[in-house]
Structure formats: structure tokens, C-alpha cells
Length: 343
Length: 158
Image (cartoon, rainbow over all chains, first blue to last red; front, side, top):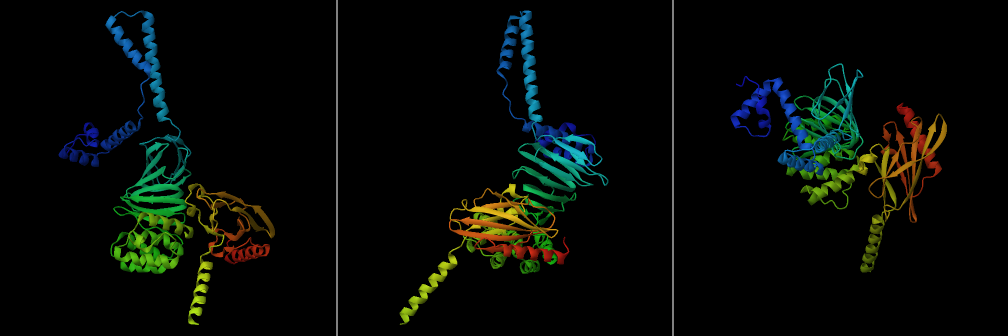
């Protein structure tokens, strides 16, 4: 067992450069050492920042300065006026580089303002954590695209804060997001997957293990995990679980028995009874649930789901039973867009 | 004789089929998500036109008709075209107080359509919406408003 801190190995570990036994030792140590975990976060943050820094072309002046420096070194005779000129050039180059760095770091949307319930405002950047206890909450202004209310007992990290991507990681607790930006700019990572904003307002909670619930009040949210996607519109909810990702979304005004059946079906295989209840209880707007079920049930049950959907609302032109049962992506998309008029 | 009957039956069947297939100019209403346009997420509801050869061309207008403290009110609607042709959003620009129905009117070439959409405390009431192949009459609007007020009073929602 490693008893000494592993600070020196952290960067190499993240780059995958350590041998397997050494990497294992680092993982074991960091699992138990808060100091090294904190240091790992700092290293990761630094690496992320480096990854995101755009390449900035060196100004021509820097080459002139370098060449001038070489020339001066060669001659070893530098008049005072030229020495001052060189110093001025070097200063100007440094100022330019500093300005470029400042512009990158302080671009609009890269700083998030946090106001805690006790009223103390602060600014948070990528890599930093927001943590509330049982008696506190906070409001985070997400760049220029919206805000996130952080409920008590919540631990949240800002992963990315730049105009093209705003990403949080919700370790535990609850957030309420109100986003007014084009789709796919705001993301919240959890143990069980990622909530992708499609223009929405929603509440997302999770415990540390990844069990949680997504409830959407406006617009759409897409919850994704390893190729599984649940599209949750306003008025609907979706359970999330570790190693299963998002469950099947359902409208909050649906029957309790249907919700219970979805609990059993969504995360357990072979829940035939549950499928029977879902099909029997489904209303027209519950085609939201059935549309998701099409691609989640076993092939032999797919026709039953299709038939129930077709009995609830007319199948639109361009959607054939054959293509739907084959889970043709374009067919399912067209059908979903038509069904959305009933959701 | 049998042939003539068969022929008549065939012609009649074709005529019925053609009538059934000929979709008149109508409205379909839905929740904002149906527009597939994130800018419409805060709308009271969205609607689309059906049966207009050029979906971007119909003339659309409407009013919100309300009953506030026994007084009739009328507000010109704020209707916004969504990114998809033929899809529109109605944003609430009428007061929260009172009972309100939305009266939609549309015209596409020689055809027209109308709809009355009641607004409840939780949003538009799809089940009580009425659709017409013409603008709704003032009697129909008053009747819908009265029915909404009665149902709200029964439910004690307001």
C-alpha cells in the first residue's frame, strides 16, 4: 500500500503513462487520500485549461525581437538606444500575450456568478465546486444563457464554462435549471448519464450513487447514457439509475399504476406484467412512453407496442409498420414529431 | 343491370373516398414542444395549419376573449411564426385574472378556419377546444367562455 503522497505521479497517471501496477497504486492511494484527490482535481483542471487554450500566433514583433537579440549577441556591442528598443519590444510582446490570455479566460460566458442564500456573491470558474449544506442554497448565473438554482445538500462542479459549452457535474443533491439558449449548449453530468438541454426548464436530482429523477417544466431535455436516450418534454419525468441510465419517460398526470409499472419495466428485464399494465393504461399523450418503449422492448414485444400506439392515434403518412418495427431512425423521428402534437 | 349497379357503386365509393381524402383547411393545437422550436417553449400553446397548399401563406389572426369580474374583455393575440412553416405560437398577453378563451382565425386562399381554445389554470384545455371550417361566431365564443367559467367555478380553481 502506498503511504506517501502520489502528487508526482498524478499527471502521468492521467495521461495513461504509468505501468499498470503503479497506476493501480495511485488509484488506491487517491481513493483514500483527500489531499491527493484535491491535487488530482487541480491537475485535471490545469490540463483542461491547456486543452482549451486556442493556439495564438506569435506576433511578428516577437521574431524581430529574437532576431535582434541574436544579432546583438553576435556583435556583443549594443548601443544604449537599441537596448532600450529591444526592452520595449519585449515588453510589448509580453503585454500582447497577456492580453490574449486575459481575453481567452474572460470571454463573455466564461465566468459564472454565484449568489448564496446568505447573500455573499462570488465568481466561479471551470474546475471549481459549489457545495450547499442543509441550511444553504445558491443561485448560479450560467454565463449569459440562464441560471441554476442549487438546493440544500447539493454538491456541484463547473466542468466547462465557455460560450459553446456550459457543463456542470452534479455529484449529489438537486438543481433547477432555467436555460434560454439554443439546444445543446448546457449539459449536466451525473453518475447515471448526462442531461442535455434542448431549450428548457427542469429539475434534476440525484444521490451519490446515481439514483435520481428528472422533471421537465418547459421545453425538452434529452437524457443520455451510453447510446440510450430519453427525450423528456414539459410535464413529463424520467427516473435515472446507475448502470441503466435514463428510464422511460412518462407524463406526470398519468396513472399511478402505469408509473409503478414503468419503475419495474424500465430497469428490470422480463417484466411482462409491467408491459401489459403500461399498454392497457396508456392514453393518447402516453404515446410518449410507448414511443420510447418501441426501442427498449424485446423484438417480440415491439409489435404489441406499435399496435397499441396505432390504436391510440393515427399513424402519420411516411411511417410504415415495417420500418417502425425495424427501428428505422428516420421513421421514428418523423413519428415522434407528429406524436408531439398530442403530448 | 348488375354491371350498371357495380359501376354506380364504384363511382359512389370513389366520391366518398375523395371527400374523405380531401383535407380542408384546419388547425391542430399542441404543447410548445410540438413546434420543435426552442424559442417557443414559453408559449401558452402552439398550433399548425393543415390543408393549405402553401403552409407559409395563410393569414392568421386571433383574440383572447375574457370574462374578468363579470366584465367582457378582448385582447388582440400575440402570434409568432415558428421556424417550421405553418407552425405558430400563441404567447399569453392577456391578464392572469378571469376566464379566457383564445379565438383563432385563419384563411388560406378561398378556405377559412377557426378555433376556440379555452385556457385553464394549468394551461390550454385541449379536450374542450373547438374547431370550425370557418371563423367562430360570437355566439360560439360566448358559449365557450360561459362553459369555461362554469367549469372553473365547479372545480373551484379560480
